[in-house]
Structure formats: structure tokens, C-alpha cells
Length: 334
Image 1 (cartoon, rainbow, N blue to C red):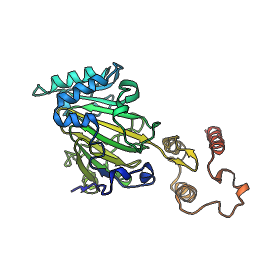
Image 2: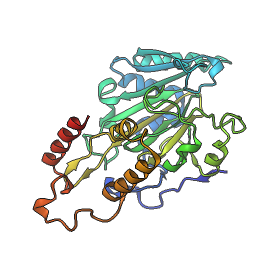
Image 3: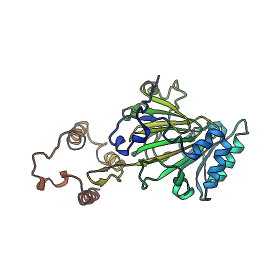
């Protein structure tokens, strides 16, 4: 059985963004967005919520996925992994809401998911009424809207706070080390942009995925109501199930500033470079590289502590100038 996600116990007004820097466990924050006008309306009715959101919509098309009823709302691949199980459209939020209203009256409806809509582009008036005080203005909120759809377990490189605005969502989270038990699909061909688990959590007996039970035994889960929020650490796998006929979520992704340098670079390039340069080496060479990586990248001690500061080269504290130098070295290596 999954373990309930830890819940924040302090004062909501005391939260700062620094509270999440380096935090390596998820956290549910009940009521973080409870006073948002859209949340208040969502508690009244779906119609009141949709009406106000439609007023904020400026008509900019956003990415919208539509799945046939046979897919049970689960975003994923088609049968032979040659493509995905949805049709992709770009429509305004209001049009998506109208389609969701139609589906809510149908017994067997298609799954619809508006994905990662940049709020400043499609609903620029949103942030004036809906904000988290500790989130800087430079952190772009994104909106996710749909009916009873499921996004399989996937991870993001960013720190993530997600606020449920309408409906309920169940989050099932897995620590990064569970990757081998989640049967992840192709890294470079995924329906959500980032790699997803190919195993359905509601089918733990599927013989193709025998280790899924181990992942579920180590999972964390929780159901969020309108106004609740969840913090998801970087690289934690999260499976998100929307439970109502109308659901909406707003999330904030960010990377902290480390040593005065904004951490905007993607570490996925490191993984891809490893596939190119390390994966095909002999077991002995892999073990040797593992020792070097543990020492220079993943260890707690300073690998340059014995070198004078002015002679540390690429092992010096990261600055914008050194970041650029490292980038050029990597490009030359490639």
C-alpha cells in the first residue's frame, strides 16, 4: 500500500520559496490556494468556475489532447508505439471548456486534456487575482484542464508546486530510485514531452510489468481538493489522476539560483551524453567512470580542496564565466 504524502503543518503565511530548496521529499500543502477567486467559484459549481475562466481567456490557442473512450482517459502510446493514443489540437481554453461541458452529459465520453498552457499568454489577467506570495513574478504559472484523464508516472527536472483549482486530483509519487520498477518508455519519444511509465497503476497484475508491485509498495499518494497544493521535488516520478468531470490545476516550475548562477541548464544532456559515450563501455570501464562521477559530481567532499583557489580551473565555484567555459569544452568534446 502506498504511504500518505507528508502534509505541511506550519503557517501558510510563513512559507518562502527557500523552504523547498534541496527538499527531497514531496509535501502536500492543504489550503494554499483556498482564497483564489477561481477556487471559491469551483466550490460553488463547475459552471461558475468555467464562466469566470472563460472571461479570463483571451482566445489564444493552447495544446489540447483528445482520447477516444476506449483509452479510459489515460495519456499514452498507441498499440505498437509508433505514435500516441490521442489527437492533438490547438484551441482556445473556452472552446475546450465547451467540449468538456458536452462530454459531462455523455455516458461514454472522450478524454480531453488541455496541457501546460502558459497563463501569461492565454489568460493574462489570471495572475492579478491568483498568486502565491512567495513565488517570484519571473516564475511562469501554467494551467492544466480536463475531465477524468490520467497522466502516467513521469518526472520533471524542475522544482514543482501544483495547486488544484477545480475538481480533485490523486497524486501517486515514486522516488527516483524506483525508475527500474516503472517500465519507462522511450526517453526521446513520449506523449507528455518527458518519458512516461508504460505500466498502468490500476493493472498491477499485468505480466509484462512484474516489478510494478514493488514500485507501488514504495509509493506515496494523496488526494487534493480545490485549493490544496503539492510540492514535487525534481526527478520524482508522479502519476496524476483527475477524478471529476471538470478538473483544473495551476503549477509553477522553477530552478533555484545556486552559487549566484541560475540553474537553467537541463541535466538531460548529461544523460544523453552518457548514452553516447559510456553505455557501450566494458563493465570495468563503467565501474571506473562510476568512481570518477561519484567523486567529482555526486560526493559530499570537495574534490579540489587540496588545490589553491586560483588553480582549480573547472573545479572552481561555478560562475557565469565558468559556466560558459564548461559549455564550450562540452561542445568540443562532442
